[in-house]
Image 1 (cartoon, rainbow, N blue to C red):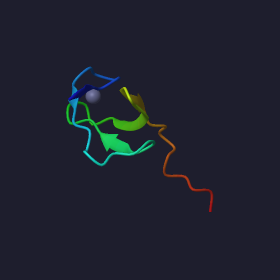
Image 2: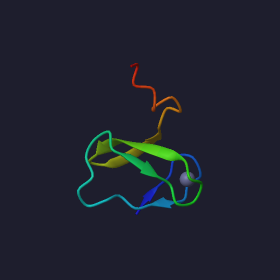
Image 3: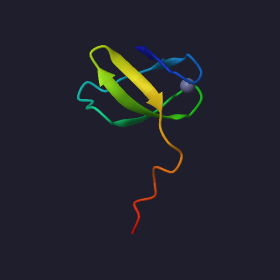
Image 4: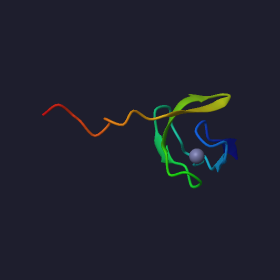
Length: 54
Ligand SMILES: [Zn+2]
């Protein structure tokens, strides 16, 4: 269990998680990006992440 950078709540990291993977915090529903695996660290994902510039 790792701490959400937004609300401090617990976030479960999937066992097969990779760098830059996006997760949702179960406590505050923020979108989080995995920025480090050892040690595990999250950052709040940018809100414009859906824009792929088509
Ligand atoms: Zn949270």
